[in-house]
Amino acid sequence: NKKIAVAIDGPAAAGKSTVAKKVAHQLGYVYIDTGAMYRALTWKSLESGVDLHDEDAVYQQLMQISIDLVMENDGQHVYVDERDVSREIRQQDVTTNVSFAAKHGKVREEMVKRQQQLAAERGVVMDGRDIGTHVIPDAEVKIFMIASVQERAERRHKENIEKGFPSDLSELKEEIRKRDEIDSKREIAPLVKAEDAIEIDTTSLSIDEVVDKILSAIADRV
Ligand code: C5P
Image (tube, rainbow, N blue to C red; front, side, top):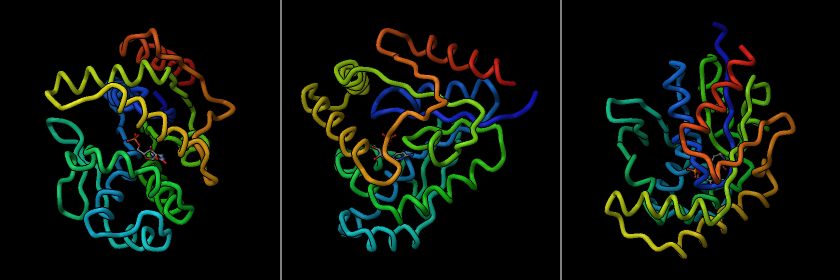
């Protein structure tokens, strides 16, 4: 079978990474979480006191670090230089600030370069905001996953409670809405559905139903 690239984009907390991981696993493909790369840069910038609104400072920070995505037995881990920051990059301060780091043109240009290197070998499922539009515009299959803010916040809330994390539904709704707004309105590579992407509204679908839809879209192309 021909190996292809699958681009999965969509707003915050739409279930992209859960679905992308399952699709990659089914196909024996590599999964690449580009949001984790922006989160890793944001974590490092916060840690070293870099002003996230200062494009040159954030860009310099990025040029000083390596960001590695490594699949381990218990799932994907994210490393900044040699440090495992998989947990840290999901913290609230990173989540509420990541869209500021991701606005800068110079930062995005470097991230896209790194992501294109990772996707050079086909047999990849990559998720993010601009994968189908900018990172892999020639991806054989492009998916745009959406769901209402209410639905996305409720899912995240349930997930937090199951994990024993503190969680506030209305705060989650506000955070998701705000992040989508910044990501959709930025000048450089905003969150937008690629013309040739297949839109999947996941509001009333289970994870496996979404995975199946994507797998059959892939089967049509290979
Ligand atoms: O996917 P995740 O929610 O972890 O992404 C975190 C943030 O990283 C997004 O809200 C967005 O600001 C940024 N991002 C981006 N482009 C991507 C992936 C993520 O701008 N390809």
